[in-house]
Picture 1 (cartoon, one colour):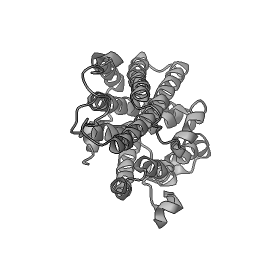
Picture 2 (cartoon, rainbow, N blue to C red; picture 1 turned 90 degrees about the vertical axis):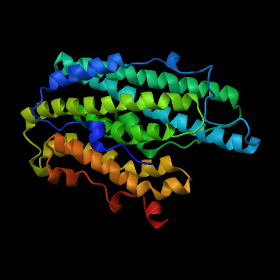
Picture 3 (cartoon, one colour; picture 1 turned 180 degrees about the vertical axis):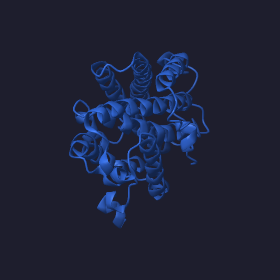
Picture 4 (cartoon, rainbow, N blue to C red; picture 1 turned 135 degrees about the vertical axis):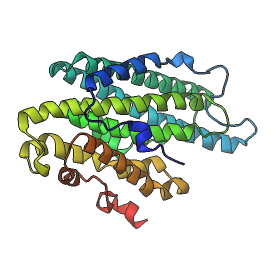
Length: 306
């Protein structure tokens, strides 16, 4: 499917903007557009876009597929809540302007609604389709990132989450909007996608504020050669960023059509990340050090040989 353009998601690159004002405006937008789990058509639409006239076997296959989709998105949203909470703690510690803290709190409020909706979907789906389990394996990215959230520098967290919201999250929700049969999952998707566009913009400028403070203490990235940049920013970033191809293969599952598009999708992930790092003033040499853009060396060996 056609991905949203980077400009549509991230908006202006104007570095001369007053980002405290931008953060305040984004906070206002998130609060004005916030929605709760009770806004979904729980009694007026099926949970998943599964027509009633399909065979039992196809219903079971589709139910497993959509249960798996929801399980993955639940995990992604749980990680987003954890990162948002951690960024709020860091923002308080670093005495960031209240505008940034207000934007982060509004972001966390949105992500909590996403989690509540996904968990309710899981709960109702288990009642409606008992004995049909979602895929059991977890993304290697999620398995590695979730336990590390409390230890990573806030700039790394904000940059990574901004990129994920602008690429994987919006792309997934946009795909769900193309389903022809009305459903709760389809009704939630446009709301979550709009939220994630605002989240990506918010996280990009929050990352800029954390990096500004880091530069004040340690200097610039020095083309990726600075030891402190490598230890606190670049090496941790690389560890999780280079799991993106494996994550995209995980999302594609066994679907041949999705598998054919993984390289195109990873290229789009890389383009978004490069746009974010350029905005943040991270040198191209440092970007090369952290594998932006991603190349064949970052793909799982099994994927390259398939």
